[in-house]
Length: 167
Image: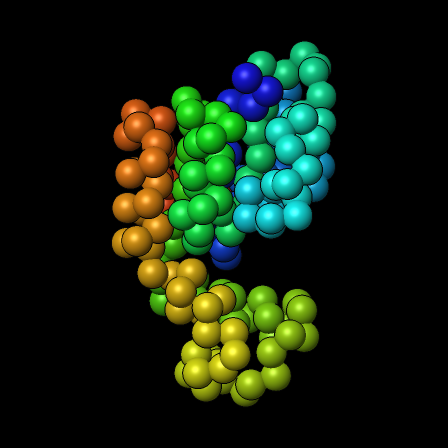
C-alpha cells in the first residue's frame, strides 16, 4: 500500500498544525502540500490511483499519509478512499462546533477577506452557511466514517487534546 493513513477532518480543528508536526517527524511522510483533494474532486479522482500515489514517493519514512479535512464532509469521498485502500487508518480531528464555526468566520474575515459581514451571527445566515454550520454537524460525518471503515482503523482526536501536545 502506498499510504498508511488519511486525516479527514474537521476544518479549523488543528489539522494544519498536525500536518506540520507530521512533516517534521523523521519516520512520517506527508506531502508538502496539505489537502490534496483527490477523493473529493471528480476531476482529480478521474486521473486515477497511480497519479494520486505519485504524491507519496518511496523514501526512508516508515509511514505515509495525507490530511484533507473536506473528505469527512462527503460520503462519496470516504467511499473512494475505501475503494483504493480498504484497510487504511483514518483519523479525524474534531473541535467544539461553536468554536469551530467562529474560527471559520475569523479565518474568512481576517485571513481570506472572503467574508465582510460584521459579526459571526449574521455570517451564519450568509452564503457560506456550509462552511459555518454544515462542517460543524459531525453526527452524519462520523456515522459515514464508521459505516465504511472498520472501527479499529479509525481514530477521533479532539482539538483541545492536540493543542496540549505542543506544550
